[in-house]
Image (tube, rainbow, N blue to C red; front, side):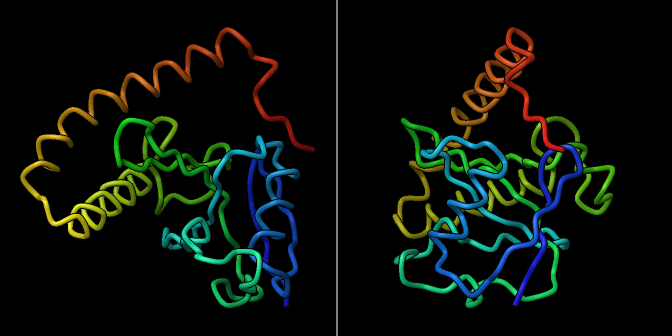
Length: 167
């Protein structure tokens, strides 16, 4: 049972789903040149998050439990802010809007990925049961996210050789 994962400059990797989630994500990190400590996940072509990053026991659960064979997935990076409980998602497929107009957005993270971030925040807030504290926290997070994205963009401009190149 195989699936295709897209990332980088229109690169794709065929992956075997009959392995544990930990093995699959480790393999994808090496292929897309992510750091080992990076947290990654997959989106299907409709923009649904597969939640591999939230699997409770990734060393023993098979990827085939979460992913379908013969489907195409988009590799994303899960960014959890250190001093907050917010989660942002960054596409690791260059020109996502070109390849998937339905997921189109502007900038580093698409509208669809931003909606995923907002949905994750709301779910986490419900679990905590403190909506008032979370609502004031969200306005602060929006400013922090802009600053984080600006810092990442500046880092890329300073070090253009650090951009991912895949053949």
